[in-house]
Image (cartoon, rainbow, N blue to C red; front, side, top):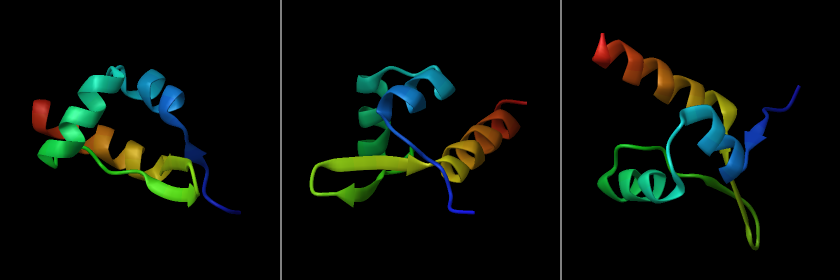
Length: 61
């Protein structure tokens, strides 16, 4: 089964971060970059976001 990709609204909902925070963290290298799915379409692989959340929770613990 192909991997599910999350668009920005779903990433915001899943992570609890704002759009500006996500892009600022991407520029710092502390948040995964999206993949290009089309000429004007980007999304994040769901597994990448899940992994990022897991690692972030592990560091916070």
